[in-house]
Image (cartoon, chains in turn purple, cyan):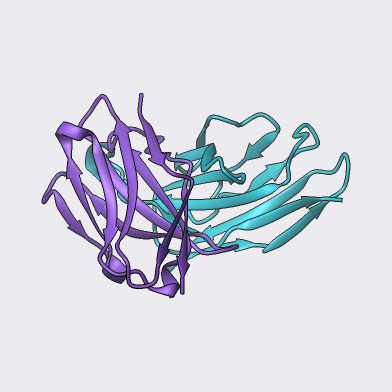
Length: 114
Length: 116
């Protein structure tokens, strides 16, 4: 069984400050891990994914995430927040051999303050 | 442009009525999925399908039905048995590689279902 925990349902940062969104997972097999972003009333857009290659993964819009097996974490970071980063962010874990594939966290709403 | 389309964007359901949400993809993806999204609960899997004419229940299939007659299409019917249908519904699709390994899921824009 897989599960994902996103610490903090709401995170606020000032424009230009570091963004850190936390994600911890549990999985019985080597996982694939994903971060998706959702803007209001829209679908989910893939930010980045980890699929057992490099542990530091770079995504779109300046985001990156580091897979830390010892901590079962996959935290999302961006050095400098922009107003356009305000959205909801979802972490997801996958057993790539499973038909169901994705299990999602409950999401983190990011607010960027001027 | 390749992608996933969902229609309608907004859908209103009356008491006792069945409604069908459309999902179409032109990505030539094998697998398709339906999720329900409620505030603060993330996404929950309703149904998924790996190949045409085959589909499996997800975590919250009660009150929903699907069909997969064509590779491109995976419509979801919300039946009158679903007592709390108000939610945002998202369709997704992914490639399936050899040995059944799934590729990344890509999402459509969603349909918001409201009860009158």
